[in-house]
Image 1: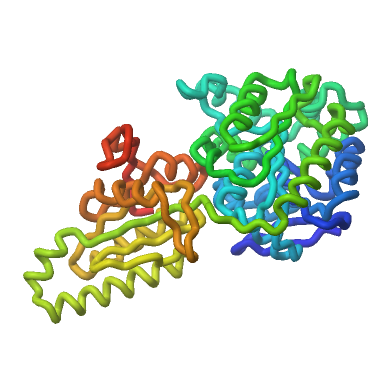
Image 2: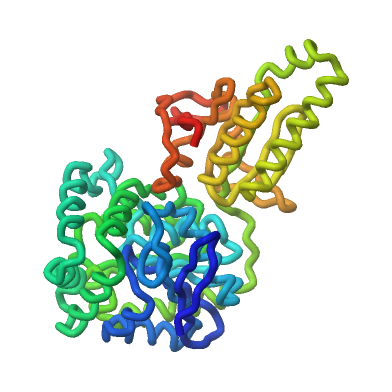
Amino acid sequence: MTRYARSGDVSIAYQVVGEGPFDIVYVPPSVSHVELVWEVPGLAAYLRRLASFARLILFDKRGTGMSDRVSGAPSLETRMDDVRAVMDAAGSERAALIGVSEGGPMSILFAATYPDRAWALVLEGSLARTRWAPDYPWGYRDEDYERESADEEREWGTVEHAAAVAAYLIPSGTEVDRRGLARMIRQGASPGAAAALNRMNLEIDVRAVLPSVRVPTLVLNAAEDSQLIVASSKYLAEQIPGSRHLTLAGGDHALFALHPDVALAEIERFLCDAWEDNRGADADRVLATVLFTDIVGSTERAIELGDARWRELLETHHAIVRRQLVRFRGRELDTAGDGFFASFDGPARAIRCACSIAQAVRELGIDVRAGLHAGECELVDGKVGGIAVHIGARVAASAGPGEVVVSSTVKDLVAGSGIPFQERGAVELKGIPGPWQLFAVDQPI
């Protein structure tokens, strides 16, 4: 039975199938449909096998399948919110995530950000980044990706295009599977939604997050899949601490059509072992976005105003900052004089909070500088610490009056959010090794 979870003002379609000692959230690729998926016999059998040893939670990403249509392509952070909403609606406190293809990056980010809710991770034919880079040479060149995306947008929704995509995904699949998959693809997204997803996918980059994934991870791919997927799977396995990598013979991108018994046996064994080993484990490290703010020229302003008026100004400033932290789900960790230190579970919310603070305090005749960085933090007595915190403080120190400056890690993680940036170039951060690429947020946002 299809139900709906409310995520903000959007309804997310989901189903719960099977029973078992633990939960699995199946994070689909770009396009899915929670009801038509059962009309693809091979994929339906694959999902039923998962539901034979666990409680399986399926959902359609916003903008696809039976979930609400939205304008543009949602960011990975927004999609994490949707997963949490579905888990809450399904009564799931903790789950293993199976991220398929494009569903992998969001699953990676979720597992690193919420290790208290994700206890294991399986990545099927997935990737950390789409775009080419000198240190990621198997990625798409922009011109090639744009050409292919333009072709797909023109052809999306036709029977011929859907059949071609299904044949590419499961070349060894049955004719019945290919027809069912083609129908699901056609009805799972409109041409505009598919085009928006393509644009967002080009911006995906979760490479900086991979070392922060501390849950047991299994990476699977077909040996003859595209160069991007084969090389990316190897890269994921190398960068995620303690992960396992399994390569299956054949060329089907969708693994349900490729040695399903082998893949499912490995997944079942892996998840059952991970559950026994980790079901009582507490998370002591988490991916977080840290925000530092302080008033520019505070000493001079305090001298100008005098003690009493300066104290009143500080109280008003603090009230403004705290209102914005509540609005954007930030957590105040420390306040020293005129500065704030806060953490967020989503980088886009952190950026919007910082910009709102910078704009609001101008009415007081003051400017703040703000800096953000996302990285793995240690959890000690409910607070965060570690090198990521020091980097965030150094990034903030580089900002000018009224500026919000972010590290490249933060910029990469907000792909699809619509937040514009101006490149600040590589800078040296005091006490932090190596050059750091920084970006200023192009306000207002």
